[in-house]
Amino acid sequence: MVSERGLQVLRAIVQDYVDTNEPVGSKTIVDRHQFGVSAATIRNDMALLEDEELIAAPHTSSGRVPTDKGYRVFVDHLSQLRPLSGAQRAAISTFLADPVDLDDMLTRTVRALTQLTGQVAIVQYPSFARASLSHVEFVHLGGARVVVIVVTDTGRASQRVAFLQGGLDESGAAEVKGRLAALVTGKPVAEAAQAIADLIAVPEESGQASPEASTPVDAAMRTVARIVAEELDESRQDKLVMAGTATLARREGDFRGSIYPLLEAIEEQVTLLRLMGEMVADEQGLAASIGRENAPFGLGEASIVTSDYAGAGTRSRVGLLGPMRMDYPTNLAAVRAVAHYLSRLLDEDESSR
Image (cartoon, rainbow, N blue to C red; front, top):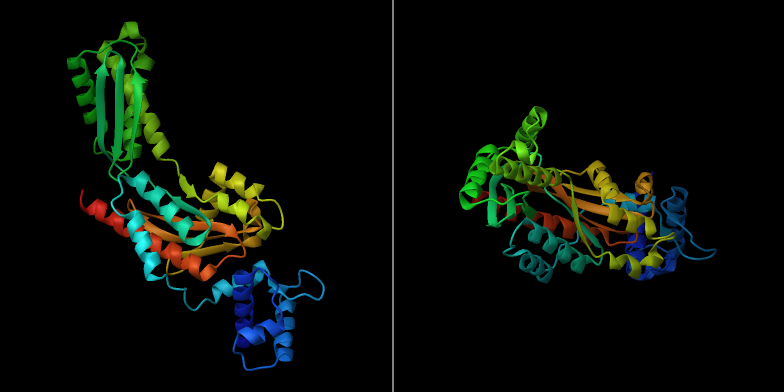
């Protein structure tokens, strides 16, 4: 059991090590912090912290550095987060002002976070499991070329250029557009996907899927429906937007091993999605996963801090990924502030629909 002064000594060691990247000794603590006790007393406190595996000596006769267990105790006992400055809050507000669409909003979010913190910034797309299709547009470009646009009520939009097997006149294009809108507009994504699957399955089961066995409108309808189905399937998959990967190279010395597992996790996304999905948030929506806690995901040298934000009727996460030697109070405050802005912008967008 760590005493109150022991926690204060641990806090001093973490803060000084994060600031200087140098092992922290008892004399340094006495000089920089107002404990009102001798260096010998601080050494005794440090010995107790070392017995608890909260700090360790990287070299013989050196100062001490926090362990991942020490960082965890430090984060768990944070009484308050370091508030962002007025300039930092203004920067976030400016970065996120007047986004074009959801993709633009999330891209701006990670850029703002990585500039504020110097860490890899991550934001999870809002879950689209409960989204509905608000608009499906079919634009005939002439001949066999068309553009298919799919928009959900969460603000997510996608478009695809397609080529029909045969030409389509304007009246045929208008019929396809009307039939497609009637089939899926206003329906939840899962229900719309099932309606399209049923549409495609019927002619295939009856042997009418070949161009010779259907009208140009029917053939175009199936082609466009397949494209919409593919877009809906992609929208139902969890995705991340990230920025700041280059910061890992600049801080490679903070990792005892290789940074390649982190680069692979960033590239593949699945690992980070699983990790973020399993992190347990506190009553403020904040969560941290530190060092060995991430070992099952191959990220035992890294830390990730996240904050929940509300969007599309569900809660998603925005976070920072970096080495264990990070400024936890500032980084947690940054993700919380950005999550607050995201939630507000998404709420305003939904209210305006």
